[in-house]
Every structure is written in structure tokens, then in C-alpha cells.
Image (tube, rainbow, N blue to C red; front, side, top):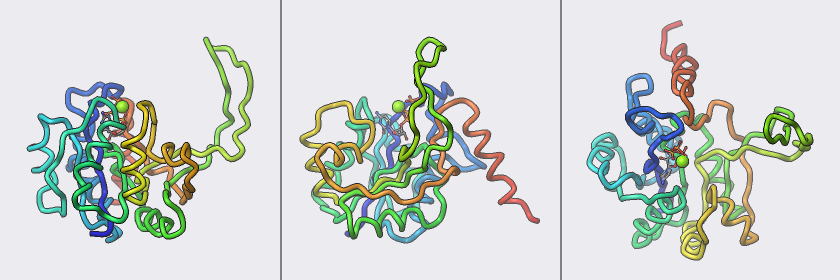
Amino acid sequence: MRVAALLMAAGRGERLGAADSKQFLPLLGRPVLRRAAEVLLRDGVVDVIQPVCAEAERGRVDSILAGLPARPAVAGGATRQESVRAGLEALAAEGPELVLVHDAARPVVPAGTVAAVVEALAEAEGAIPAQPVADTLKLAEGGAISRTVPREGLHRAQTPQGFRFPLLLALHRAAPAGATDDASLLEAAGHAVRLVPGSEDNVKITYPGDLERMEAAMLPRFLPR
Ligand code: CTP
Ligand code: MG
């Protein structure tokens, strides 16, 4: 097996504050988790998906992903970093060459992004989709600005993030708690991480209103012209 993809779904969606975790909410009739899996598979470069979710949701996740090339879900941990580690350990015996790590809360990834991440791994140990920051950035506390932060070179990191599997597994096994994404483990260890173009459409559902805005943006594409 060459390329495996971790589908990260062990979060509780506290900022969204819905009764159910956001990965299980419907986006135009299909669970966000199912759509996130389908966009991972669309470019035809991912061989298998390894879902990671709360222990109690394993059966539900397996049935949502029925019919797709997905392994049985494994239980995640209290932090995303712990959950990624659990997913990597579940793949360790299989030993894929490359691994992608994707947020189940990102159900919209443009065609070609997954393939671009995998292609970039021919020349780097990590590759991530990222968007340049467009807004002027203000450092502020208590409503008062202390300064303007130069935005030149600043990017917003998205997923799926791609890595050589043995390297990411080794870095996670050695990592202290507190990394906010997987690429940062490579950066800290001095490994090359490539940027590929991200997309304004690749939104991580996080706050109330995000899912509704996403549906409103998608709907016209599903209607006849
Ligand atoms: N995630 C995970 N394990 C955790 C925390 C998060 O697998 N312990 C996953 C989430 O399910 C999500 C992705 O990582 O798909 C990005 O995390 P985030 O947007 O923070 O999701 P939640 O943690 O669910 O949301 P919140 O932080 O608002 O509770
Ligand atoms: Mg979270």
C-alpha cells in the first residue's frame, strides 16, 4: 500500500456547540465525515482511509463510510495530536510509504489538491495546502491594538497535509504535547515542508454559521442551470 489517509474525527465540536459533533452533521444531505472521505478519494491517489474517532462512535463512523476503501475506525485521544498518533500506530504494521492527515471537519477540498500534495512529496518530506493571508494583521489585547504585524510570507495552513509515513510516525513517537498541526513537527526537526496552493473553499467547520455558509456556496453547483 502506497498512500494511506488519516481521517481525523475524534473532536467534540465544542466551538460549534451543536448537540452532535460537527463531523456527523449533514452537509447537503450527507454527513460531513462522508463528504470529507469522498474528497480524499476523488483524485484517485489515496489507497485507503484510516478513520480516527471517539471510542463510542466507532460503529457509527464505520457505517457512514460503508462502501468506501476505509479500515475500521480506531479510537482517538483527548487532543488532535494524540488522535493522529493513534491513527499512525494503527497503520504501523501496514507501513504505507506516504500518509495524509485530513480534518473530517473539512468536507470541501478542490479537485487536484490531494494529488498536488502527494506529488510534492516526491521532493519533500512534508507538503501542505496553504493560503496566503490577505487581511492586514493587528496584534491586540483587550480591544486595543499594540501593533500591525507584517503579513508578508504568512500563510494559513489547511489539510490534507502529506508526509513520508516512517518520518511522521517517528516524530509523533518522540513529540512533546502541544503541536497544533503535523507539519510543525517536521519544521521543528528541520525537515523540508512544501506549500501547495490551498483554497478559500477549504474551510474547517468551526463556528456556528460555517456549515450554513458552506451549504449556501455549494447549492448552486447542484442545481440545473
Ligand atoms: N480532532 C481529533 N481528535 C481530537 C480533537 C480534534 O481527531 N482530540 C479532529 C476533529 O474531529 C476535527 C479536526 O481534528 O476534524 C480539527 O479539530 P477541530 O476543528 O478543533 O475540531 P473539534 O476539536 O471537534 O472542535 P472544537 O475544538 O471546537 O471542540
Ligand atoms: Mg479542537
